[in-house]
Amino acid sequence: MYERVYKTLLDGGAIMNITDSVLTSIKKLLGIAEEYEHFDADLIMHINSVFSILTQLGVGPSKGFMIEDKSATWKDFISNESKYMLVKSYMHLKVKLLFDPPLSSAVLECYKTQISEYEWRLNVAAENDDTDPDEPEHYSGSYEVTPKAHRTQTLDTSGKVLSEDLVIHEVPYYQTSNASGGVTSYIAKEGDSK
Image 1 (cartoon, rainbow, N blue to C red):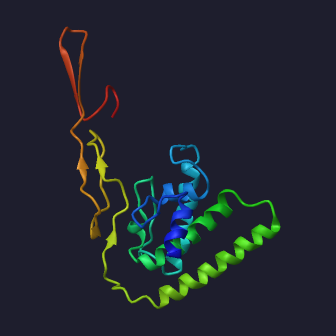
Image 2 (image 1 turned 90 degrees about the vertical axis):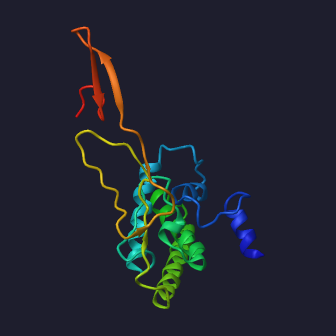
Image 3 (image 1 turned 180 degrees about the horizontal axis):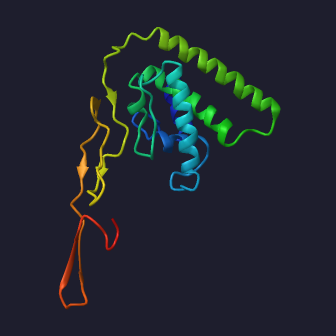
């Protein structure tokens, strides 16, 4: 009951869950609207720094984890629902301190104390974790790709679990008239670009 109320309050009325976007949920916790993207690059950098710390604490994929955009979900990082809220609360406070630290030294100390407690609890949980170390890592990259003419594209999916289908868009094809009265076709590139 209380956990459900807590989840509801965190998301301003809608229940947050493990399949939510990492970036979007952290933006909501910081009071930033999902559609306001001006700080996304800064937030992604801070979120990835915290994921590095979590990896060092033994939480999440052993090879590390990072996000590139709002497509990565919490489930891509951690499949254990019991640790999810702790990881999310920890992420929120760490990113808040990096992105928008409080002016009050009392509030700052309160945040630091809470972060220390979360780190201790996450470390204990990681030490007592009975999950299979051979469990495959979840893929967190883009699920859509458009072929390019002069560039190889590799999606780092080897040995990872995908949460949705990959979408390979059609090869870009353009036609323009030329000085000789004919038609010039561009396949997999735009105009004079390589």
